[in-house]
Length: 611
Image (cartoon, rainbow, N blue to C red; front, side):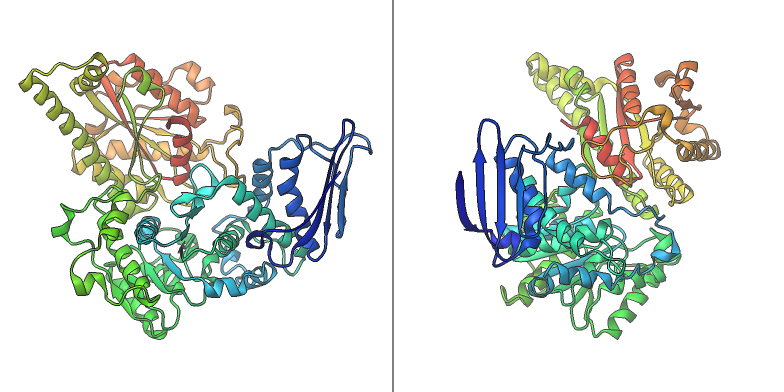
């Protein structure tokens, strides 16, 4: 028998957490006892944290507020079928509301409850002490936060970044010093928060909903890890967002505004701007980017009401663009980078770390700013990924261009980026071939195989899905027209349901059988696309039948629905396999696939194709 009296790590479990730990391992018996001297409320979370580390066998739990004992003496132990991380994901999934986001009763949704949760978690004072940068917006807020974090990290600060949504793993939402929080820390903080809230839950103060819990968890993580700066990206809107419990941030930012989430935020730019401006706090300086007049008027009016100094951060100077490399691709990122630099410069001034405004007073950028801009990374935005399967067979023949654009304005930006990206790729490969031809350079076979792909023709495929609350009439025409302006026409559009579902979180979610999937929304998207192609003319569909095979009777039985210019697949893996099969059947063609319309779709594709 081993008995140890010790104190829990106060960063995770709070202060005054003395307890007695006893562990006994015999051939026929396992016994774990925990005796909490002062804070029995931490008991369930600590049990989950310790158990997998001290025994290979799941132990039956008998809970008491003062003591826990587990032994093999009472029948067989109750085994959990889930790994510790998946158990946490199951608990998190239970917080997802089944209500439609468009439900009008969502407005505000008892925002005041957040302050009850903060009190339960003893986060009132830690949140007040945080040096927060708070960012809202329709487009670019995630990129702005990413640039901001990278800059301040390169300035030597201990950073915390909270963003949404995640693409593959929920831990992506919580970044410490530029890296996703590790699983061990995540589980410790998760159960600490979850169990405390569960114990205190009542009809008056129920468990928080999914995003609210994640925001509370972010505050707990950043407080316990004692970050120097917490960069918070608003989830939706601003006024009633869970991140808006911060009463005195150091500085606020509003990225580009546009039409999105109109079922909640309003149908005009003015209404949307009013919701975003809800993060403004009295006397706290704020920055925005050039906005449409209607939106700017509302932002200025809200700022005036709260004595907020609102300034417009200019996009990164065009004269500097050639000498500054951005880690995030796309011309629109110069606007987000400009906003990030303004937020960082103001944060450094207001927290007493510098005396001058680097941007307006020196006219030059410190090396740390330049490095931060160059090394920023964000998955799912202007990201290029070769398919891991085809890359091993014929490198470069199946490449995915991923961008989570899901608003009309972002469709324009996405289309421009995609069009320029595939043209740059073509020009770079031609340049390589010309150099080889002029110099007579000989390459090893693998290298030569890579260069030979530039002699192949390219075809562009669209892989698309969007939430049913969005209007495809505002998205698909903008995407099609913007690509056409650059001479890019999709040979085929593929519509798929997401693997990720909105009512379950986890990396190990099972994919439902194809015949169980509702593809009615994807069929709606397909009908709209076919009509759009006919309206716009035949240019973008020419020669499509020479490259992409039409669905057969067998396909129909499997749930695939093919039209002349598009196909609906019952699942994303079926669509990916279809692409791979077509690459193998058409050795003279390179497939360039634009994946857009949904960050959830982008994340699902990355799970399947990324090495």
